Length: 374
Image (cartoon, rainbow, N blue to C red; front, side, top):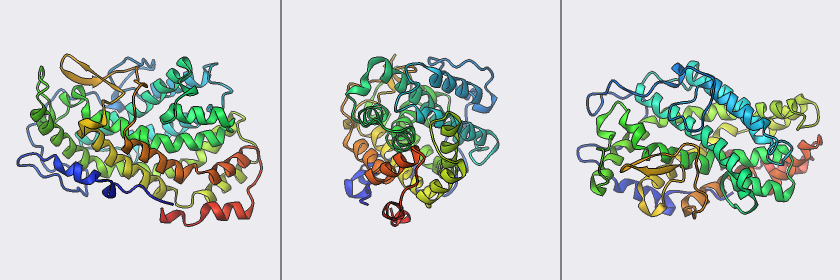
């Protein structure tokens, strides 16, 4: 399988253009920040694990806690416009996967004692969940799924036209979620002036009331430095995602969206993705790079999750802009993920499994190939 190579596309060269005087942006092996560039502020954003309440609001600028996330996803699943559709499977599976993710953010492998890294981690997860819900709702309400070719709506369109089984749709949506959706969400973290105004490193904060390009380029450079420091914690998601694949089968079975004995289905999943952590890691590495490209290159277009308000780029909660041309980097990233996780052979196997049938040895051999060699 051909793999998206950022270097061959010139992306790494572009990322290296942005430099900050007196500050290098090397690869970091640890999420520990030895010392901040400036004295940290005290009024940082409330930590995800300390947020109280249970009622999710799409326009709430604070983090949703785990209870809010689960309630919001339950509301989405219960939406009569969504139930019974070919794309119903992913929200069902996603609800169970986010419960595991959010537990790990507070008491597991995704927890960080470094305040800045924890904030980036929570903001990225918050963006991904809340805009997945927002985009899904808007796609159904506006029937954007009838015309969209890419992103979450594009997968809904593909599922609708092929009458996909819930498992097919869930796996294809997974590919989009960990590629283009992740890249847009992380780019939004980098660009969000409101988030960085509460971040414990002053150099990452854009002075209010100005859109000076030179100054913004320098500030974005400092933000990218923090994002690179975050990469170690970011990578810990890979194992969690790989280990969550059986949850997909479990969740679909609970909603009667998957036939056949659960033990048999989980065994097939284990065979289908023997290198799933590596597989997801490769895709997410590409998304991590593309996110920086989207944030730094003005030619990539404005982030659809954001708006310009009072001379500041901020998250536009509850809204998403569909009428745009995705960048070539984003398109290539998404297609690479679909080729790896939801190629035609894989989708055929998912369809069989969704009907309670087992794929043949020839099909399994053809799909598995050298999965670790992606």
